[in-house]
Length: 468
Image (cartoon, rainbow, N blue to C red; front, top):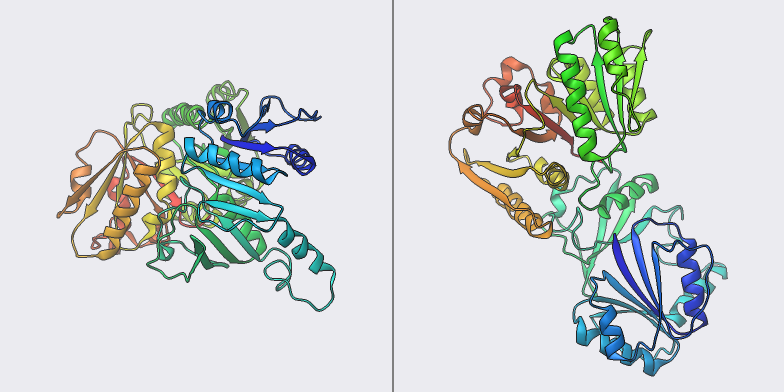
C-alpha cells in the first residue's frame, strides 16, 4: 500500500480532497495536511489521516516525513508558502517525487518537481468545446481510449525490461518520455523507473497492459485472474493420488490467499467424493459435474466463468496433448503437480534459452518465488554464444535489487537437465509456449530446455503464458 502525502491550504485543495475521497482505490494510504481544519464525509478512517499545522514549519513537517511516502502532492494557493514547503521537504527528503499545483504561471520548470499548470489545464479543457480544433491524444482517432499515457513507477513489472522482450500484440509502445526528453522506442531500449510510456492499441488490451504495468509483487495470480482452480478427472486419476492433489492445492491456496475451486468430472468413487467435499471451506469450494461437458467445454468455459488465474493439474492430466492445447488456448498459468511434496519445496529453477520468453515472465517468476518463500536459481545453459541471455541475466539482477530478493545465477556447459534430475525437489518454472506440443520423438534430439520439459516431468512445473 502506497503512502501519499497531500498538503492543501485553500478551496482548490478542499475540492481535490473531496475528489480523492470519491475515487475508489484500496491501494493508497493518504496523509493530508491542512492549514485550516475542514470536515469531510464518507471517507474511510483507515485510509485517510488528517493533520492541521503550518507546512512552512520545518520542525512540524519533518516529523511527518519520517514515514516512507511514495509521493507528495502540494495544492496550495499561497505561492510563498508553497515555495517554503518545497524547501522543507527537499531538506529532509531530497529525492521524493513532488507534484505541485502552479496557479501563477511564473514558476520556472525544474526536473525534480512535476508542476501542474492551472492555466494550461483550463485551456486544454476549454478547447474541447471549440469546433474543428484537434486536441492531442484525447480526441485523436476513435477517442475511445486507444491512446494511453502511463507512468512506470519504481518496482513494477516493466522496469528494466528491454522493449524487444515485451510482446506487443494489438498494442505498441509508441514513445518514451524520460527527464522531459522524448525517446523513440527500439528493441534494445530499456525502460527505466519513472518513465512515461505512450501506448497505442486496442482500448481493452491497453486496460490490461495498464494493470500489468502497475502490478507489484504479492499479486499473483493477478493479472491473469483472481482464483485458483484444481481440475480432477476421476476416470483418469489414480484413487490414491486424488487426495494428495487436494492437499497440495489447499496448501497453495493458503500461500497465495486466493479462493480455490476444486472441479471434479467423471465422479466414480463415493468415498473419495465425500473426502473431497469435506475439504470445502470459506475459501475452498467443490464442484462436481455428474454429466459434464466435453473437456474443452469444461476447461475453457470455467477459465472464463470463474476468472481463473492459476490452473492446477496432475502430471497425468497434463501429459494429454488435448488438455495442454486447451490450457494453452485459455492463456492461464498452469501448475503441474508431481507426486512429490509441495510444502517441502525451497527452490524455484529457471533455465535460460535464447528465445527471450523468460524475460516476458520475469516478474511473475519473482512474484511466485516471493510468495512461496522459494530461493530462485537462474541457470545459463552456455551451449552457444548469445547476447540476449546476457541481457536477460542483467534484467533479473535489476529485478533482484528492486524486489530485495537474491538470486543465484549459474553457467553450465552441459545440459543442466541431467544435473537437475539428481535433485530431491524443486519447482521448475518456464514459459507456456507452443513448444509444449512438439512431437516427443523430435523433441528427443533437441537441446532446447523448453522443448525438453518432459525430462523434468517428475518435478512440479509451472508454465506461465508470455502474454497477459
